[in-house]
Length: 347
Image (tube, helix red, strand yellow):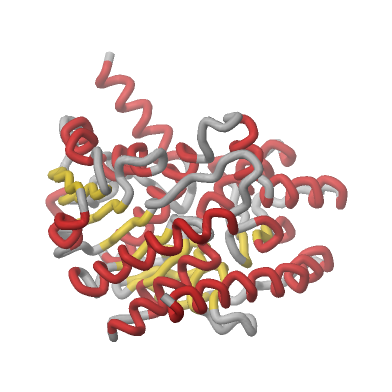
């Protein structure tokens, strides 16, 4: 029974996206390189399911789970899953270096979650400090790792990380990513429902940032094409932008979007691992250093390769509604980026 459940889970996840086969068996485990993945914040609401999903990924050979407390238990639990990777748990700042050493990919879901009534900005003062200290350690112990930033507000925490790495002399813009995959996952799900399309075949690019109106799904570029009304597109856009709030309110004070975020984080980490391993044509949306707008960081389609970002792709043709949304989001995104840079330089 358990074996059939695991097969079903693997089958469902590997079918979930045409571009991401999280548990694909297209690689024999012997033929792929050794890859260490570290999850920072692994005992939290996102961290635990993310740890489990990364344990299921055959591209991972070592899985390091770090948090300020609770990680030995999570590691013992996840470590019993009969998949390729060896799992180790690390708790407390004195063990952070050991968790990070030799990491190829570092995923950061650490920090406090949103509660009803909270905005991502409300999280800033707590999470900004956490991110800064973790990135200081990354610069010291695994400066060449790809860093996947989940901790909110991503629009500010990615610039904080960049400033920390610059000060340490280790910054490589090709290796720092804000994980916006959940916006893409939501946009695909919501679009598929309205377009009556199989969700596994749907693709929707999402650009901008990772909060509220800075999230701009490009439904005009969605595939397969569907003739949706302007009103439906507006409603889908708003629902994608407010997806996090929808979950926070539905959980009524008992959490935020932890499970879907863990899933999205695992998809993006898988894409990074595939890129590192030389798989061709791996393209995902991510919040990265960019010159495609006047803003220093921006989320758009990114081609992933052996060094992280291989190229940042153009936005492509936008509808009038999307052009308007792009101009509207820029001031808010610019302010969030500057807030992160100022915090990093003042503390």
